[in-house]
Image: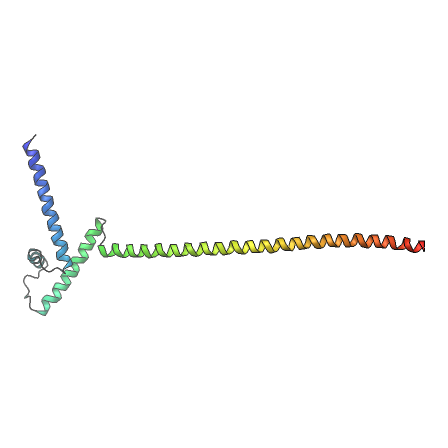
Length: 164
């Protein structure tokens, strides 16, 4: 195989590893409030014009806080352009998702409970309706029997008077 091929891939992986290490260091530096990692801090002070201000002065602290805020805002905007969101936002969304998932499960349970109650109520109403219907049919039958007996009685009563 070509020696340059291996050299190319070897350098590519070495640079990727160094880049990963720098990225991890930068993440730690930012998590520590832009403190520690003197190389980053020195570069930051230089680019934000803080290297010409005495570190012990109150003005330095004010300028440092302003520069740190601007840096973090710009970094967040930069990550946003790449479609990356900060971990805090991601965790908030995960928490909100979990809360909504729990709320949906609670609502589903409530809906199922209400459906069960409605089904029971419907069953009870059907039973009452059926009982009432049976009672009406029984009363109608009894009324028909009564009417037949009255008719028999009324037709038999005059003929018995005639015989006497």
